[in-house]
Image (cartoon, rainbow, N blue to C red; front, side):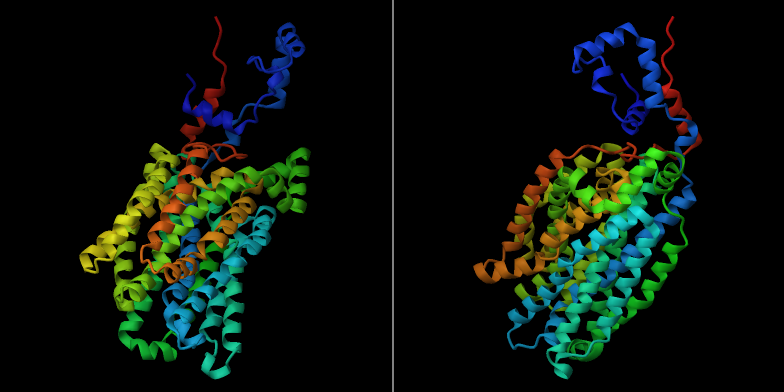
Length: 517
């Protein structure tokens, strides 16, 4: 039986030519040649696929890993703080920028503007993703942070519809497009950044901090909007209070930019750069990647992209249904006050924040697929009971229903940021993941509040969010069943990454041939 380290090594080394392997799949004449000249063929194989040396294996610096995780997670938190603000102020935004006299039309207009930002996310991913593979992860992540901060602060300074008429919603759409464009390079880059810094055996744990940042951003946005609404009241919020959260986001973005620029690029990317200098073949490959990275993504990674889109689509629908749409559902469909619904959501997100790192640890121990499957099946079987509880209206019933959905979601949140980067090779990881993630987010994630609101309006059924989540979860179950298990294995196209020199020595020793007597 092969050891785990041997499997880790074999995943990094390209597969051997079928003709030279004794499995019976290669042409018979070549196998005869192998039998006649075994030493010659073994020497050729060693030359073509040399064994890993100790210097090839990345021994991570725990302090550097923690700094990288902090920078990526805090930046991600600020990005989703900016996005969360808009989601939680949807009702206010509708009244300020789309005054039609019809509350449903206002809300649909507001959510349509929310969805507009997702329409340009694929465009942002196609620009920033290949750029991140070409010039490095950290530079692109700093750039996306700058654009998001500018777009969010600009929304806080916009004139209202009452002041300038049509130009008010038009300018709102422009800056929402800027937010969406910048976000197109955020998740793929941040998850790649952490995955490439983390040791193989703890990638799930460190990756879970990225979604901890997402929850922290949403919680901060919901908490701030709730506090301002309770302090200022709805009329004052409609008059000028809605501007405060957007204006606060600008200075917070500067903090994220500073943290990201202080870091070195990821060890996996730096090793790839070194190979371009030392090996001409690698240099040609990376040069090709730089020139035609996007075309290469669609040409070589299309099967994995389809799987990624299905997986992320199921994840995003359930994510945005709970974290973005639910406060509006509680206030508009169940007639809770806006602050009441947000407080319940904040409490749910705090619970998820307390356990999300444990989910990451479990995914390292038991694998990504079992945790992802648990989350998808949770949404499939628990969505209807959860919404029936929510519709009871009491604080206890609503909290229980939200928690049921939240516990299903945290299985996805704590695992996805480690599972998705491992689906793609290092040379095109940023671009492939950004494109796949944002195409899916554009089609399914950002449109979730709009689609659910329209479905409720068309059918009159308050259970439409549950049915929509169940349909998404069914797609997710199929996607998880089709994906490969990547826990505790090196990232494709990168050498093993370990925590200690002793682990590196074990991997090198595992390659040594068994002595023959």
